[in-house]
Amino acid sequence: MPYEPLTRTLYTIGANATGGREGRTTTEDGVIDLPLGKPGSKTNPKANPESLFAAGYAACYNNALATIARAEGIDVSGATTRVAVSLGTTETGVGIAAEVTSTIPGVDAETAQRLAERAHETCPYSKATRGNIDVTVTGTPA
Image (cartoon, rainbow, N blue to C red; front, side, top):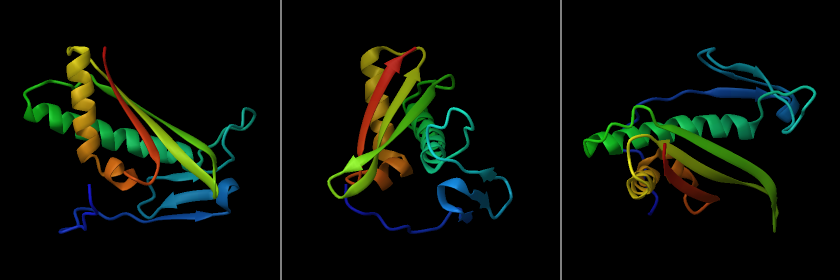
């Protein structure tokens, strides 16, 4: 799918970070104010860019799933979406990949996968990552 510029802005929020991975991040509205830490710390776990990206992607994707399903008359109010973000090396440095898994109650496996794939077509995070990182999408019945 080609690049799609915004035709109308619906919402804008700014965030600031200081100190990189071991600093702090805040949003301009004060809703997020978190200390940051390196990924994988067992002794002092803190939010990191990957966990924040995963949380945002999961919430956005689950909303896209609900919108797609509602248009088809399917109730997915009990659906959950898990996004696992992996940090790793690439040929040119460091990159990320994502695995999106939606668990949808009340549907069969084929419907779950179809809804998940359709949500991936419309989710703004999916659009932003398309062609830039590896993303796998799985829909499973509950």
